[in-house]
Image (cartoon, rainbow, N blue to C red):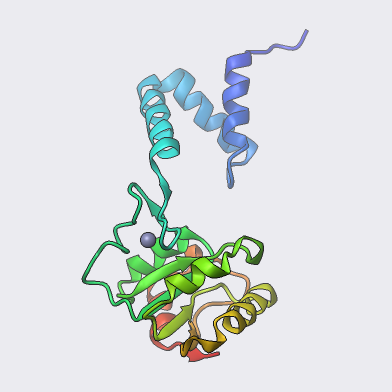
Length: 188
Ligand SMILES: [Zn+2]
């Protein structure tokens, strides 16, 4: 009979099901928690529960938030004339780290999920929409589509420039490249 420790295997499987965690890493993490440091496991369990329960979407921009409005949308010091469109709320973290952008954001993951009415209300008072998408044919299509939907809103459409290689996600771009890309954006 095969030697099995079911709770351990379940733990390995749970880690392995997460993005970016291979089988070996899953075993290492499960072993650490189950055998070496149970306390870190309890802390992790609590953090996971809080993360799942307490992180929600900002009703205005879809950024991650603890409250109805995220800290960026509720910050009166932000420049509401510049709106940066990103594909993932994770990208907001990267752009905020670069410190280059003082405007507001809007998250559109997929065109299928886009609510045109909601987007139109988000761009009220905005004079520049900056697309901070990782360059690809799919994102170029998204840009054209969104631009078309907002055609009569009197908005300048730009996208982040050089320094962002094709097919690379924003979270994997170093801060200096991202700052430069944001600074030297081009018209679309
Ligand atoms: Zn927000």
